[in-house]
Length: 342
Image 1 (cartoon, rainbow, N blue to C red):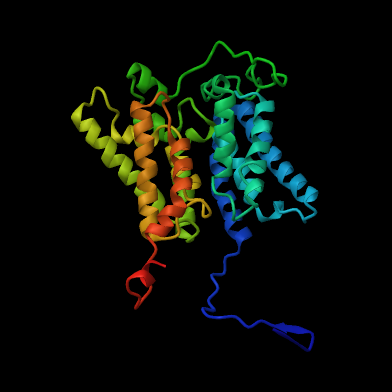
Image 2: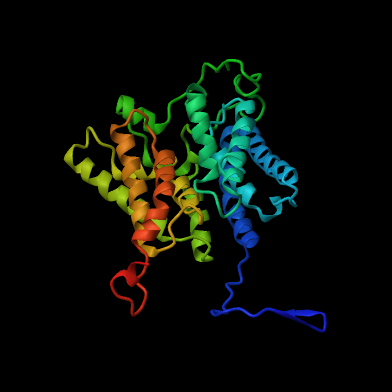
């Protein structure tokens, strides 16, 4: 590298092909793809949904900014990655969750799930799911208390639990409802496919807009900003595995369409499992990674103690990703024996 007329000449090895997409450009487009999903969540849950998403986003962004300042580095909030974390984290939460818990989880998302590993590009696990997993373990009742969507007074009132003071027991409204997965698992009550697809159900903020999630994912796939192999593998494996169980006993096992559109599968498959850092780099690895997530999800939903298993399945997939990359590494051209495995 040498200077010439005030300019710097960079000498690098091939290839010299640039994709044209920078990190902040990709992240910004992911934010755009998530905005309709977030907007629908606010429409469905009103003020509770708006405050949950706002506090989740603000706590994540503020935590990242403060960590950068404390480390003596320039703030990285401008690359949009923490905005994605905040939106995804907020979409995984029940809208009735006390806001102080939402804020605490946002700090955990960025501090424990991202900064502790070294920041963007180094996090082993999806930061949004790390925050949610900690909240699920610490506050299981609050994390499984749901309010119905499209309530009459959702834009003029808040659930009693929303403004609960820190470290006090939240009070819940008399009107609560179970999610479609819980209704099926514990009561064998099926939810209409149209209600699942259009979001007329109870659940986390991001469980109520499957169609918008799919459209957002297709937008990113069309722009070559998402690896389509991962959601395709997840959806196909879920359909085949749950379909086989359904054929064995339709009164005991849910239909494959129900499994696809219920819970957080759509959001997880499209926007969380496809995290570029936590997912495999090889095509074969992506197919295996998606299949693993799908199988673990169905196993937990069907035989586990909880009605939902997407979060744990993706975190397990993140942990296995380095091994999948090693096992599916392409063979070096012309290499034989030990050389091919290195």
